[in-house]
Image 1 (tube, rainbow, N blue to C red):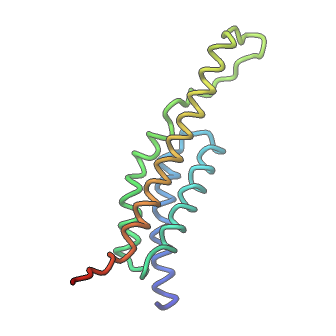
Image 2: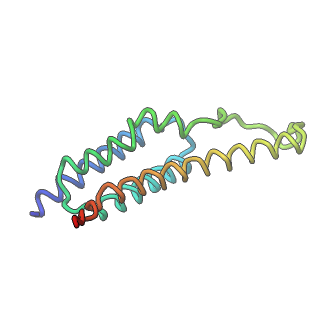
Amino acid sequence: MTQQQMDRLDRLVEDYLGAVSYACADLDPQRRDELIDELREHIAAAREALHEQTEAAIRTILDRLGEPAAIAEEAGIGELPRRPVPAAADTSSPARRSSSATLGMVLGFMLLVIIILVVASLLVMSEPPPPVVRP
């Protein structure tokens, strides 16, 4: 594969990640950067598993991840509007603060499981089928 072809494939990935970043404009910047880094790592792993990197193969990886707007919507679940709240005004109970933290951990775990399942399915699909042994 020529350098020009690789640059074109890299550009596809960067355009996709840019679209996800743009769609996640309302997220906390640190969370958005973490999400983009996770997606970048996932895409890199999926590309390494490919027998041959073609535009169709890269587009398939990106299509399986989903539309940038859908990723942004999923990433934004549980996010609250950012309003400054004085520390003295925090009257929520410790149980309520704990449930918010638990919800965040559960959502993060679910995202991790989804990423692992996508990578595993890509790896399984990239392996050739076992040979058929006929007696």
